[in-house]
Image 1 (cartoon, helix red, strand yellow):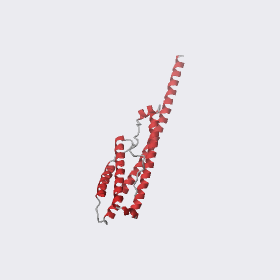
Image 2 (tube, one colour):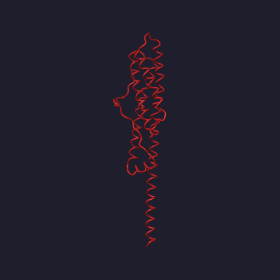
Image 3 (spheres, one colour):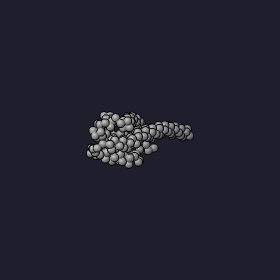
Image 4 (tube, one colour):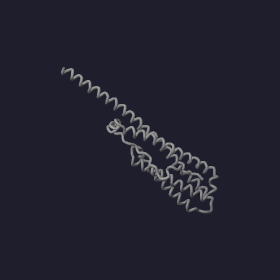
Length: 206
């Protein structure tokens, strides 16, 4: 009888161990998949941010080339260009280490990108007031179209990132996955913070 009881105990322990192994394996694999989905979604956001960074110098040079033919120097354009330059440099510097796995740097990077977007808007408005005929220039018009498309793609990729991060964060907080998340070191991923006026689409048009 003693041996029978021992066998029953060992069987129960074995069943529990197997159940925990299966549960842990399933939870771990799901969290790994979601974690990779988050990283891929963030990479796509970064691609569009980089595309905007690549387009801005061309836009500025186009305006400078047009302004060279003007007899007047417009102070507002000069100030706005200086502000855009500062925001552009800050956005570039904040790129290093900006991943969902580094919340502090992620927040710094996204804040710098938001500031760059605002500075770009101020610059374009200043250029519009100073050089209303510039919109007819084919090179400027093409850059404007590319920037508008980039802003739309940024919004799209940010939305996709937001959705996958929500799914990931919910998955690691639900019971019993939260236990495995704690054991395996899966932490919450940062989300984009809504800013005042964020419900309005960015405008970079003339």
